[in-house]
Length: 141
Ligand SMILES: [Cu+2]
Image 1: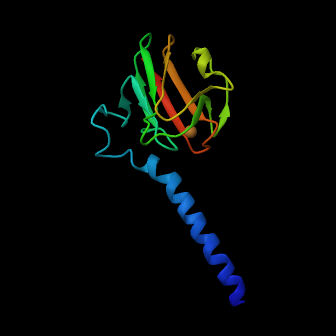
Image 2: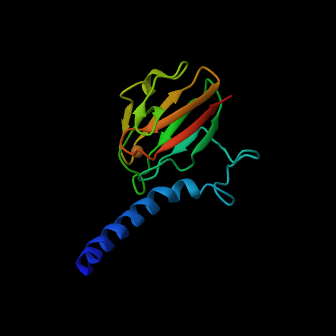
Image 3: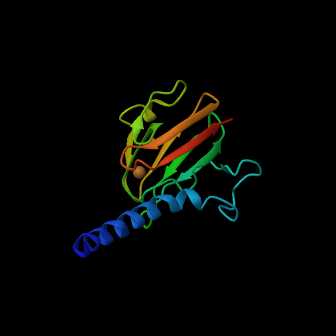
């Protein structure tokens, strides 16, 4: 019995750490987050979408139609991402979305930026096929 417990403890710790790492970025978007957070809904209003090592800096962005939106993957804190419209690491076509965001999406490395322009106002789900927990809602106004 003791042997079984000893075997399970590291597994439980690993799971806790993994879940904690995934949950933190999304949970950290509450009060006191980005200085550019607009009032109402807690969405970040910015034409620049910053990527962290395994997530979006905010899980909700509001951008303006027909203006370039920059996906920024900082060299110091970014990661390798493949961004597309979709959810939970699966690309789904969304009407009105720029073609760059169609499957299989565009790849971005730390230190790179990638610009897309949304011509059609609406709400888009943006995902990363590398990171299943990396989901973001983009509202184009
Ligand atoms: Cu990613």
